[in-house]
Length: 140
Length: 140
DNA sequence: TATTGACTTCGAGTTACTCGAAGGTGCTAT
DNA sequence: ATAGCACCTTCGAGTAACTCGAAGTCAATA
Image 1 (tube, each protein chain N blue to C red):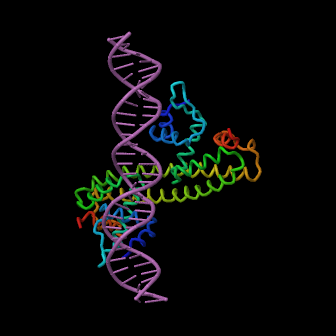
Image 2 (cartoon, helix red, strand yellow):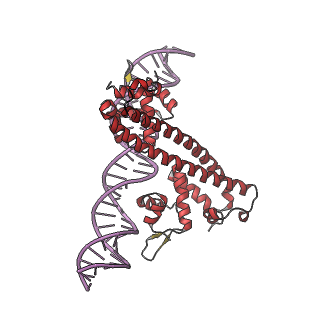
Image 3 (cartoon, helix red, strand yellow):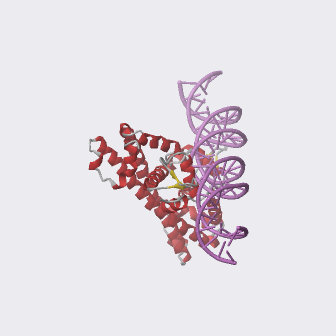
């Protein structure tokens, strides 16, 4: 059993965010202790993880709630849930690709700055992709 | 030279968002035609791409503006820019890893639903990671 | 006993969009 | 030429998802 704070650390969310999620009833069967403090068991943590992943796919909390409710309705909704997940999978894969490009872009920039600091002149560097910062470095 | 809409398509942003960015002066040297319509040349597109990537790293627009201003200040700020980029690179790499995990998580869920629909019984499935939806499938 | 610290609820504030109204401009079709 | 259409513009209001802080409860420790 975990407190809000522990759950937050475990899942790398803020405690505010977790409370926000529970208040929106995104975590079914949330337990409380005798002082009304939220308690997260393994199942609750799994729900949190699920919400986190779906949220990061870009799903709205409203749509996530719909999904959670489908889950609670039982086996009759598996097909709907399947469709939702396949859609989110597509988004997740697109995001993965974007994340790759982003990391590559930023690495290149950082490396460029590094080279520049090490004394390479701008014209020794591959110019094409750099014309942003040509403008930038030269105070256009 | 591209219009707002074309730039939006090219970069997969909404035109609203692009106007928002330009209004916040995140795109230096933005050109206008004789009717005051925004025009994006290659450099503007590069700035947009840069803003987009940094934004997706989780940088606030305010911090991005600071970075852009550093760029405009010229070579004396390269070290600061380098530090910023290395920080963002770390975030980008963390995000990449998260994106991987997310994609894997969601794929597994989708596949599980698929198996279920194809007639596999719940108890034939690997149980451990699935206890969320055990609760879910069984209308707990 | 007093302080510390983690929890609670609640409500206001913030960021980054997101949307739509109201209006201008230019192109084409009747 | 004039009507319609598809763009663009600015501006201001609305929204989602946090994000923060105040005020209060409770239990354990010094």
